[in-house]
Length: 157
Image (cartoon, rainbow, N blue to C red; front, side, top):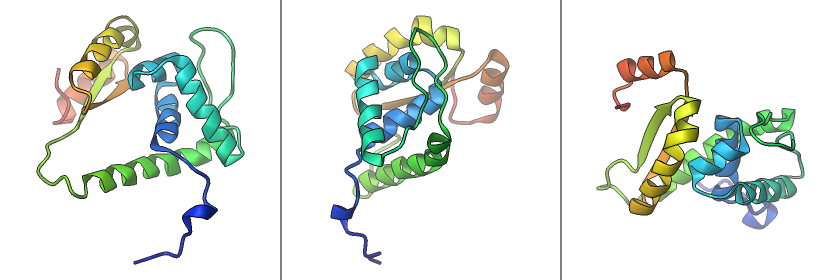
């Protein structure tokens, strides 16, 4: 069913830009989000700036200095569920003709400490070895990681 949407009437948004925003919302910090995506902090900021310019809104609060939490604006919080839906639909679109392929995503639950001091380097090597795989990292405390291991059949240690 065709909805009548004309592509020329829409801003040029990319999955890279929207993925950067969603990952920033998950990680809460520019550095951590960039590490998960395997790009530089400046590369992440560039994607976010372009997305904000094309949408005409500020999606997150800019702050200077290392390791500061990055809060979403009201517009960012309103946009987030739509951004996640956009990525989910893009993923479905890519899988339309890929019936035989197995899972292309790995989910990792870890503490902030392990992400900063261990996983960042490991993920860079993994991304080089398996560029087709997407790694989704969730920051959790130790009790939440244990609970995820017990309750989610897709989580492994």
